[in-house]
Image (cartoon, rainbow, N blue to C red; front, side, top):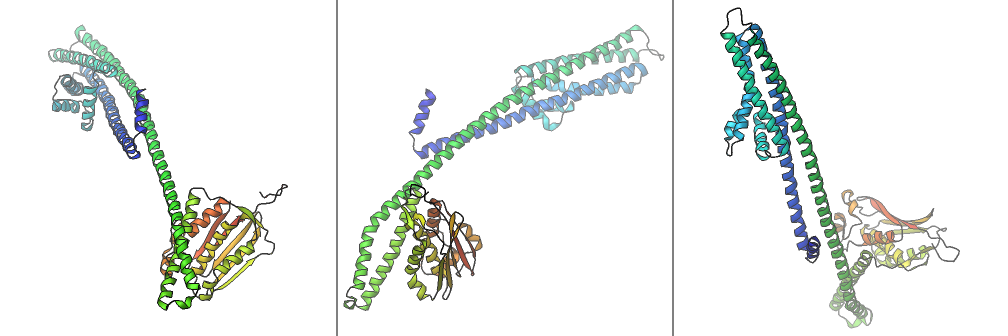
Length: 484
């Protein structure tokens, strides 16, 4: 219930506060994960160092015993010295262990002891960390107890070695042959066997501990990864929802604002057009100039508002199709006539060919008209004086392919991937005309064509021209008389 209360309290927070809380938790868990990684590496490194040290310890013990037995046979003092040299490994480790057992230990003495025992200097800190922090943990405690028993057996081996050395040193040149020496040699073998058992037990204990730690660390890592995944998913979901909601609010605001602007703008355009067309002789040239500026600006603003409304409806998925039988040739004729004035001013050659076998389309007439208007108006706008524009429509299997080709300024290669993005205009388009445009036409065209299951693409070469291709799916009439 407590967890549920905290969760409910979190849901009541603002998006910003929730995001801050979750990011804070992610940071904490990341720090815990880093701590877990560091801790695991220290522990595993310490265990590895002790296991490696045991190998050195075992090898030195066997070498010491070998030289001591050789000493009893050959009576060469060099063998006895080698026996003493090899026991330095055990004595060094013992020095470190005894110092670490103290409540307050001298780190330098411990370091000297471990290095004397043949351990690498870089491993000493991890060995100290493991001993001091895990002294009371079962497997470490057991390993230390085995270590202490080994030190006792090493002291027994040294004592036996000293006795052998004294016996040999005090004997005649022929060497001792009494039962005392044989008994001491037997003690050496017994001690050696005990030390071997202890060494194996020490390694096995640390090995078992390493396996337990590995499983524990793995579980902790999985748990931390799971928590991070959940929190990251929560952050991503929260951001996605906020962005979607923000986009909806933006589209709703644009739609509302555009509707509110439309009424006074329509009145302004109507009034200015009426003044220009009715009794223009009553106006001075200056008045005509200003009215023309008002009318032109109003028309451009009206076009922008219409584009914004279309974008908002498309983004909000509120664009409703009104399908009917449409003759594509009629649509092309209408669009070309709308552009005729600019075509004549720029002395453009515009040709269009709608194949005779092109079927009637079952489509939203306004939609296909808007798409074609955007493509043709762009071609007219960005094709230089005396250029050529061609419009073609050909029926294909299951669709009609509509093509608009021009000899205009083209689209720069590096900017072509952005062509269908919102408010995008290529650099050469901005510099080639004083018309600032909206950058929404191709975005609207693609969104509308996609809505009817079609597709749109293009190929273009800068300063050579552009061809846009529109694939319009055909819908066939079913037995009931409707189209599908």
